[in-house]
Length: 337
Image (tube, rainbow, N blue to C red; front, side, top):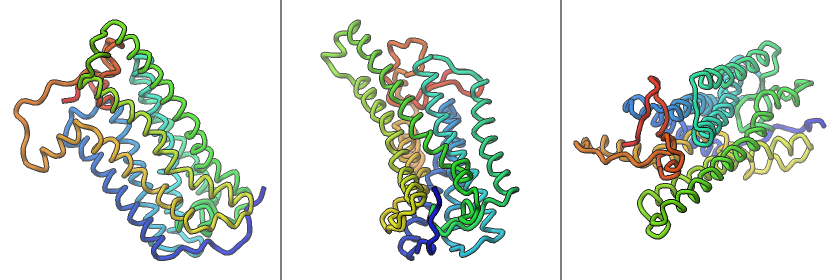
């Protein structure tokens, strides 16, 4: 299967503007996520430590994409290679960290166990594998101008490389496709575990099934968030995969303006989407942020809601802010305020 030999995909100014806006929103979203971690130590739980790493990767990715779109490369150059290398590393790392978060939640919620060894493994794989792939691609001169056939203005794998298909898979597409499979798998297992725990809880506490409480509503919101995470990821990333397949098949449909815009926005909006899910749609973080903006803090914070990662699995499904639960750097349990 060969890539087609046609003129570069045209990019109109308004298309570049939309991609740049998406990049800017992602940069702001990543900075906000990292800022909340820096300002409030009680938020530095295990899942949010991984989320910080994901935000760092998404921040680098959005910044490198923005440079590529602004530069409007027309051929391979030193800054094209630099931009392509940075985006390749950051984008591939983002895939690994997204899957790492799903695996962490699965281990802590379903298996009820986490360990420092797993965290070290996450860092080793999620930074080391992308770095190794990117280093090899740069050393073998595989990164360069791709005529926007598999990108939206930025540089990636050189469109003239003979083994470009192999390197496109190694430099992102293989890991992206694997993420499409592994993310729904882990989150389905987590949701099934929560449903079984709810059934057991209703059996021993019938009053909860007759009188919906704030805890039950909290569990419903947390359950919806678990559903949204893989859906949002797939919705944002699927357009780049569609263009990749169309380009491989030699179809001119990969130059369709709508598909190009969806590809550009989808690849660059991940940081903003994570900010929406884990800042604005997380009650604890949202309240802290609002109180900080208003220069007002409550002297007596509300008692923490039940946690999805407490020692009793029967009470696990009754927490809205499940991603705020877990072990901090010292190994202690944190509760959402």
